[in-house]
Length: 148
Image (cartoon, rainbow, N blue to C red; front, side, top):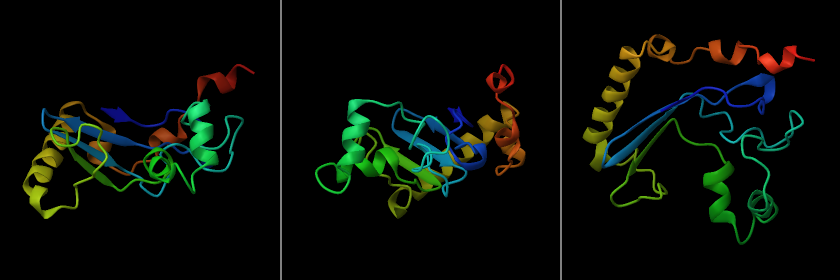
């Protein structure tokens, strides 16, 4: 899986690039700019509103309005920043709630998945293989902006 930029929902039109690889047992995710908001900036940058990478819905509104009380455990995984690496054991955690990337117990598995992702990116000639922190995709122009 690869993601670069989905919508203009972050300051300076920045994306939230990430790559992932999945096996029967694990899901490994590499977030290249963990200092950015994965769901879009919390303040409105453009017409789509806060956390604009998540479509507006009753559930989104409910979680955002109640983030300090009954939905605190739901707000974090939906809206807050994520670490550079995420690893989930899909056999024990199919909902991908418990990130085990920092666990020493899974260090060897994590390294194998890192390597498998690198090999996949190399084979696909992914620009992030040579330069993981490229801003190339942030600078591409959205075609619809030229229609006006």
